[in-house]
Length: 272
Image (cartoon, rainbow, N blue to C red; front, side, top):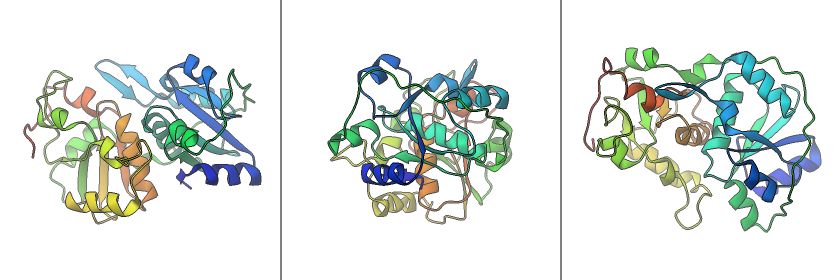
């Protein structure tokens, strides 16, 4: 159930209790308009800043406290959305997958998709029902760190998928000490996953599969590492790949803010 449309969400909420989570930086935006019943989770609760890396995974104890505060534990179904293209909600799903959470999904199109279907919104804030949450990394294979990526460069069974913009990938848009990309990485801008006629709704699965095949990623059994600058944008890519049936996907949370600032790691430039 990784990706849900508004009708799917309505049916799910009618069938079982759901913790609906609005993920975002802007509490005032949440209070101006959110889906009825949605609790607010600040995006900053899902990342740890350790300069120069800005999107690292928090320690499990911190995650447990933050998730439990909004009512998330292993006993509840979680559906996430955001108003920023899907990366923030995707980051929550990636985190839940690492923790081995059994049942979670993301609203396709986020708040914009909900509004496009004339979904109701409300003002103010919902009161969460906190739950004790002991977070443990039960599924570490969904994460890659710097050393894992470095040690698998050139491995034909591993592909690196860069979800940043074309300029960042080529090295003309420099957002670290060095511009460029991880050697051998293929490029697929996260925004290319969205329907150009109706963003941030996602393209049909067939179109996304075609784009993946053009980049040599048509084998779902191949391991894929996704990254961007802070594993925000690439979290959407992660969710899409998992929803398409790719079982071996890793998020590199250090991403370019770590790799591009480490002079000991190799870098390539150009369009590839």
